[in-house]
Image (cartoon, rainbow, N blue to C red; front, side, top):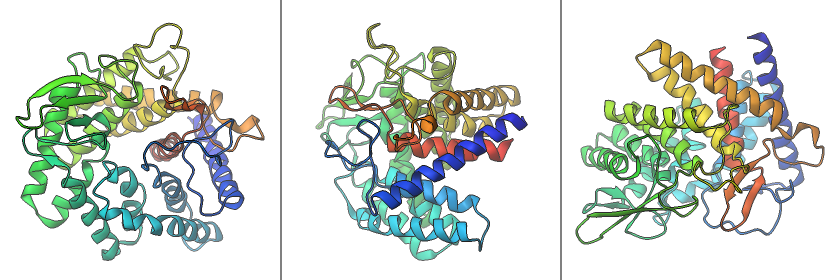
Length: 370
């Protein structure tokens, strides 16, 4: 236990060091994925969904620092500096990713300070996201088109739940809940695997087929999407207390644990051909570890909850020992071996900022439980 604590604490210190260096090297730059280990490059972004993760790590570091210390003041100042420019996105009706942007930043800031103005930002972001709701199919549409539903949405619909809870708006709550049930019905398969995308008839709301933007095939299981489902359904259970959502998160977690490699690190797609199965995605592992720690707290069965927590700790141990870029002095990220978009050849076997954020979040959670 002490050995694990020491390893996780050392890795968190390395993470802080890498974030500080990025701030100093490229002030006010929001990294997304590395190219040959370097954050700053002219690579394609595809969509602007990642700005919250870099300051999100700063908020975690701020929470861990003792109040009033030089370290606490530094992280508070930097976190606020990188968070404020995101506020304008609260009205971004084109984005499906307001949960990614605001849970990592304004939500953490509000929890720390209880400032009512910050809460208003979160509420407005939730209302903006709710405008993506399609009544005919009962889902929040993706940025691709109105007939498209992404599994990623399970990480964002919590913003609508949050706005509903803070305002008492029953209609918002109903939309968020119906979306979860639709995603559960059309994207989660009987074995706990997930599809990345669902396609609907816009006029009738009829579900047509499963598809993908980032996975190997429409009928395959993209590992990061599965991790989003584990985490997202667990979060939405906390808001709704609908046990069906907790059960779905559990089924997705069981599929992950059955099919990931023995060290807990999955291939980028569980159904990728043999020639591509050696391509891992450490970002999916980091998200899954954080999700498993959350599920370990939520499950009524203490034995299974302990199994999930222990599996998360094992995964974190492997990430710390085998995939952290500590020995590569030129590497600017924290966690190597992440994947952004295989088909577009973006951020493949690199550091990716969401992998960094959920890795730091999982390390923080695990240390709180040891």
